[in-house]
Length: 354
Image (cartoon, rainbow, N blue to C red; front, side):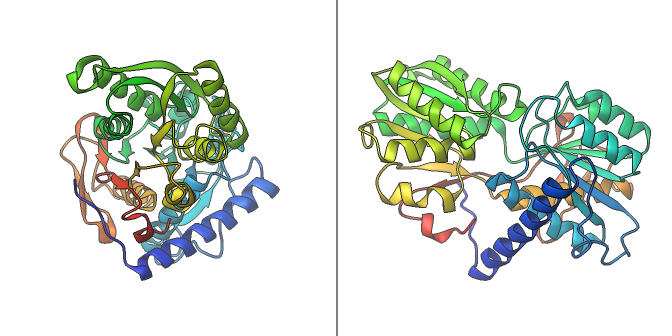
């Protein structure tokens, strides 16, 4: 497993970018619910802002999304695009459609979207493409026919394999486990869960593990906390919970840390080091994983630029340069991989700041 490393300067730069992204998000959420609000303070450099790029995350005010948007904003500034963020406050299926329609009316050149529901946003994305916009899906894919490329954090099967391996190691390869996901229609979550189930069904290393339940916290902290609580009440023999969502794993860790289950029920999944650090250090969590979210936003922005300037069309084998991150290649089905996931434990979690 290749572990990326970070310098303190880079970490601080990312923290500043995340704060800037959060400020933009707050502006949009509070004042312009249905309008693509440009961040005038940070966009339009370089080319004079003749091209525009808008990020549409699954929901605003999500700590993971804030880090992704920080990377997207930094890359957008580097290429001289006008940058904006619009999106819903709740990750419901059709909540992004109105924002997409507004961006199309405004003639946005690149729309970067993490779909809450691949089917619900399809017609709006088709209209945007008919109007000339390039569509970059990130984090959670749309229907492939509705976008030009999908920037994936990492290989989906590898993400699933890391999580089930970490869980197996923590419960001794035996026992009932459950999955606490985000929304029921999130493409990325469902793909990871399918691969986890496939590993349990087919890999003899996991023959002693049974997945007894899958629940959804909708990437809402309070609902995720309640779902974790409900899982343990409904399954008294539960040995572990996998939560492949930063909101879900943090909420579950918070519940476990003050409950009778601390140290008895294992927890792993995908989390932010800054949110999970206290739970690793107090013994609630042994190990979890994630990629660098800022790089996801960066690669998505550079992919959008490459589509606009004609460097790529989304065909397999196309290549483009993602700034300091280097070259990326478009794979099968228009998928671009950002990089390998990182595993976090008590031994290395203080090396990361995001």
